[in-house]
Amino acid sequence: MNFLKKPQVALVLGVLACIALAYTVGGASGPAIVDRLSAPAAAAIQQAGGDGVEAQFRSPNGWPSRHPVLTGAENLDTSTRSNIAHAVAALPGVGGIRWADGDLMVEQHFSPLHCQEDVQALLRARTIRFEEGSATIDEASRSLIDEVASSLRPCLGAVIEISGHTDRSGPEDINIELSTERADAVRAALINRGIPGDVLRVEGEGSSHPVEGLEPTDPANRRIEFAVISTEPLLPTPVDTPAPR
Image: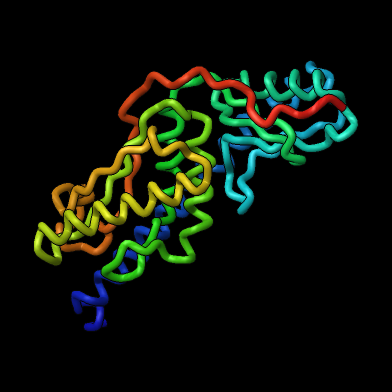
């Protein structure tokens, strides 16, 4: 068992333990969100005249989400569809609503801090990764960027700060430059996914704010974080309103 005393082995085992814990916590909290929101959503749909309509609290990749997709309303008129969407959006904790056929999105009036919480939940078990030593987002992280954009969309109007962080493995001026470029790359990716650029701020922190409990040189300090720095969102309005049926 002497191999366990080697620093490299201990580091790898520590990282694997952190990943396992993150998945355990995320897996425990995610289904709870779905369970808590599904029953009230079903009741709201019934009261709004939505027989056969279902609210699916899952992202396109199957992860639990506060932003439901409504299905089963293909034969309903526009007014009924709108009533159903607004009824579900009015439930505490529910984020943006969209129909599976893409006709209507309704966004709830709620604290934009929910957006920050949703993004933090996404990044608890997964990380936006970059090609080594560059600001190019790794191909495998693009689906995560999609989910981050979906979580931010219900709070358009709140100002979101994207901060880049590095470990302390190089000169700090280079770390600040690289962390800023990576935060800029994430901002550009979110703009390409429909998030307005004027609500996104970028900050390169370099290695000045390591993760609590980690050594400054730990590679796990290389990360992107999001924070709501303004909590006065614009009043949301329905978008993509369907044409008369």
